[in-house]
Image (cartoon, rainbow, N blue to C red; front, side, top):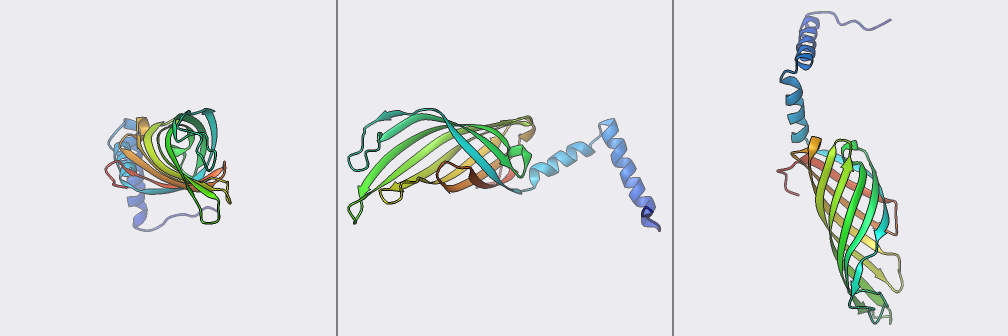
Length: 192
C-alpha cells in the first residue's frame, strides 16, 4: 500500500510541484535558478586518477652528480590521466604538461635527496565541458626511499556547463598510482 499525504500541507505540496513542472516544461525561470544554486554551493569530491606518460621531457643540465638523475631542468613532459571522481563533473580525461626544476643534496648518511619543484597546465575534458587549470607540485625521493612522493595542488576554472565554477584539488601520493584525489567544486570567485 502506498503512503498518502493527508491534511492541509497536501494542497501546498501539489501546487509547488505543479508550478515547478509547468516552469520546466515552459522553459521558465526555475531551471535557471537551480543552475545558479549549483554554482553557489561548495561540493567536496574524492576519487582516483591514473597517470600515463605520453611525452618525455626535454632535459638540460644533467645528469646530476649524486643521484644520476638525468635532468636539472625538465620541460614539456606530458601525461594523460583518467580520473574517476565522486562528482562526474570533474571525472574524465586530463592532459597535463609539466615543467620541473630538479635539485639534489647529500644526506648525513652518505646518500642523497632529490627535490623536483614543478609547475603544470591541466585540462580535464568530459561531456559537460572542460576544466582548464594549473598546478604546483613537489616530488621528493632519496637514495634510501627511491619511490617518488608527490604533493600536488591544482586549480581549475570551468567552461561549457561548468562556466562560473572553480575546482581545487590536492594529491599526496607515492609511486605511479592510482593516486587518491581530494578537492572541492565551488563558485569561481572562491579563493583557494
